[in-house]
Amino acid sequence: MPMKLHSINTGLFKLDGGAMFGVVPKSIWNKLNPADENNMCTWALRCLLVEYGDRLVLIDNGIGEKQDEKFFRHYFLHGDDTLDKSLHKAGFSKDDVTDVFLTHLHFDHCGGSIQWNKDRTDFEPAFRNATYWSNERHWKWATIPNRREKASFLKENILPIKESGQLKFTTEGAEPFPGFTIMYTNGHTDAMMIPHIRYNNKTIVFMADLLPSTGHIPLPYVMAYDMFPLTTLDEKEKFLAKAAAEDYILFFEHDPFSECCSLQQTEKGVTVKNKFSLREVL
Image (cartoon, rainbow, N blue to C red; front, side, top):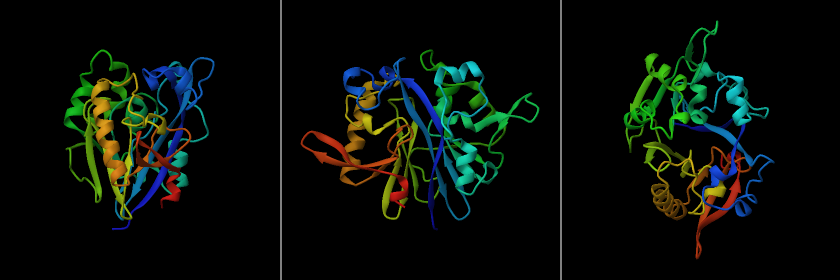
């Protein structure tokens, strides 16, 4: 079955640079993604659309538009791209999407799942013809959140999915779509799903928050947002070795400068080999 891939940009937002780079000093990470006067760095909200003959699968969907002004002031949402505009540019609308695959349920990955209804009295699925995919373990983690992570799991982004009857769970190692397999990671949040997509004899990996950007490839660069940083370190080390050995293409959700990269094994460990756009792969 022929497959097409589309990079779907939903805008830019800002997060604290120290939180994004963890224990790494600002004097080092500021060269990778320069901070503004408030120590905030710009990050992408980049999703991936996988087009099959009869399926249109959207991986993650950005922050969305339903939050209030106070919320958006905290995260400085900006840029010309939106989910609707990027889908339209690819030749589609939300109603064409058959499947919404959610790597995890933090607001910047699933906020576009749900929108206000017409008279703004209640919420409804933004993709009315789609199945929404999560997994049972992460769903429980997100709907009964711990106190540290609670602010990232917004009920209005999550509960209406189940209430709509459009929610479906998958499992680790499953292949919910042709050539689309899932790896679980547990350092950033419990049971985050990392899609591996076979395309033209290459493996393209949607990195979600295992590696938010090329700047996070060095092992010590672990976000302060991660629930279990030592687990993240182990997961990164194993993944990077395999990705370099098997020549994976990494697709980044949050890198504001690079959509994709390849890796190489060096004496100093795994490093970036080449940076490029998704279009250059297709």
